[in-house]
Image 1 (cartoon, rainbow, N blue to C red):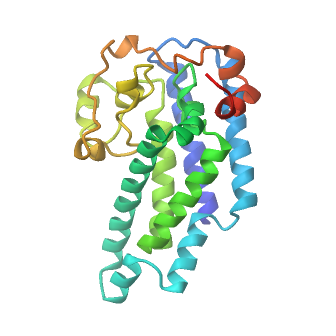
Image 2 (spheres, rainbow, N blue to C red; image 1 turned 90 degrees about the vertical axis):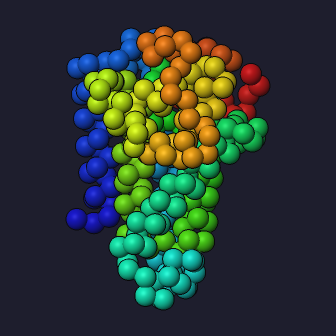
Length: 265
């Protein structure tokens, strides 16, 4: 299978599995129906994908191949010095994940970047499609940030492919409107960002929103002191979304969602 086929297969597979899980055993009752919310959330990911194909047709893997051919990056030098390829791949994935953690944290802390990222947080409900809901401008900027990290690291193309598959799958997983059994969740959260942990990140409470930034592993939030283990209101009573965005015409309609970065609260 080609890289595109692998990525698409994992993406569609996880999306379907999470959707079925949510349908069979939803964690929370949604404010709005799927019919009201999903067209905007799924529509925006189509726009994101088309724009990225136009602006950056080679993708991050192409960037990695170019960097390798040009001799760029720390890990390229490590491979040239005889470092095991598997170790370089593993370290590249870890380094890219840390970079994404800090990118996410930056998008919360810099006002101009928050204008873009609040599209994601303005979703009034929390389900698998929330993990797809990012403004096109954020997606494009994120691509160039990740591309810079790939070049600086000299990450091998294989590491980039694995990293992107993991990142997309984890985003779908931890945005699910589901809950793992409590004993299992307690064990899993020691490694991964679970739905319970990431739901806290979508709380209207600012101190909770500005925590649990990880998309995959929970280690970076522990390491960089941004971990919140439980919400003040309790797991079942978290108020999801942003206090300043409660108008359904803005938060659940694609044109309203796209205008969020350019409107005053």
